[in-house]
Image (cartoon, rainbow, N blue to C red):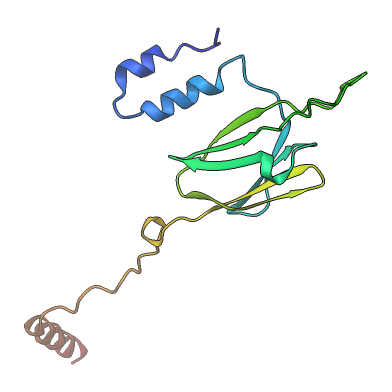
Length: 158
């Protein structure tokens, strides 16, 4: 059972279905805990997700992005001939999903020392970036107005 009731939000909003399902998925108590992972910010627009995938080879892992959802899955082929006296290293299949914000793309992935690193970058299109608007000087008054002003200045100086 989740700790928050979002039903008032559902009644008064239209078109926020993705946000509502994201809130629901975040508040679920049965979130998977395997494999462990880190999410880090490496610079202003760059991120990295690191998953501990000890025992998985590169061919055992699959990374897919579809509709702003990054899915990382792993499935190892089990060796039927091996008999374990103790098995403490988890090698079970897994699937992790990460909701990506708009304009966040996967820029690459690599497997190193049992850690899968997935690099992400936020690329905001130029049309959506804030831009500075220069303030220009007011236009000059009409020529007839300048003559009257000059005449008034000339009589005041006399």
